[in-house]
Image 1 (cartoon, rainbow, N blue to C red):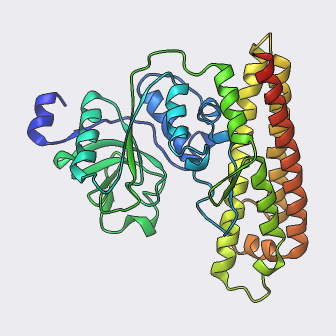
Image 2 (image 1 turned 120 degrees about the vertical axis):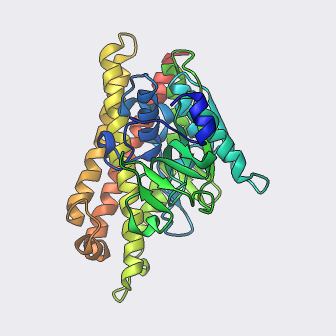
Image 3 (image 1 turned 180 degrees about the vertical axis):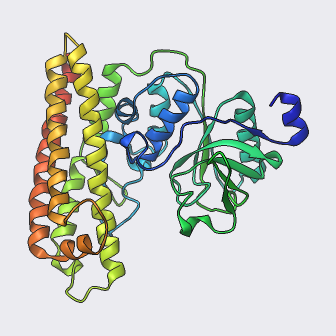
Length: 357
């Protein structure tokens, strides 16, 4: 469709953008899935492992100190600056990032104009929200000058988020006219042209250290410190009363499962990436391989947590098992194992950073 047709019809659609969904690239973190899909569509080859490490999300762990918070898993908490994970992901790709956030002064037309400009240039947009929660998704097209959007969203097939405002295009893209009414639509972003080699190993290492370092940010414990509050919550018998109603256990299992997914996907992926770098690096290869080994140990311990719970599912069996004190005691021991391995990984990265000074 040429520019004249776009202007006349008020529409533009980019076909062939790689699908974004849970399980894409064997991953479960929407932002790096979107970054890889967008970069690949724009002709830039990059692997999921690399983007997980490069944006910093693969090193994260967050736990709300005050409540069982199902938002712990959101990559927006990776750094203390909420927008840094998005900028860092673009910088890793050697690209700039333009971001338009939703404020009290932002109008629907502001978002629509931003999206039209990028689609007309041939570039998908990364958005937060559109359908369901503010997880990253891709906007690949528009109709009616942006009143209707098309793209990929990890929640597009979920009945609770479909409603009457979401349908599926024959090409598989979601089609929605209710995207602005969704109050979880918080931002839209565009990747700039590829302009350089991206982040250096020194910069990537500094970011990883920042993410892994234990600290408090608002109500959240992050990095190494998050393990202490995760363990405290799981060990608290009062949080798992014998007569607990099912919704409470569902909430507990959701938070537990999200923390496990964060580590299983994140540490496994960054370990894979660091191992590849270590096999290529002559100067710092041994430290990279050592760090990879520690992060692999985190992922392996999480696999044992899944075994204790009866598998990776989030069904009634896992709910009942999480309520059992003996199983939670076993989980707490494995949380300590993960913390120790992550701490060693952090210390190794700090040695690497010192060696590159």
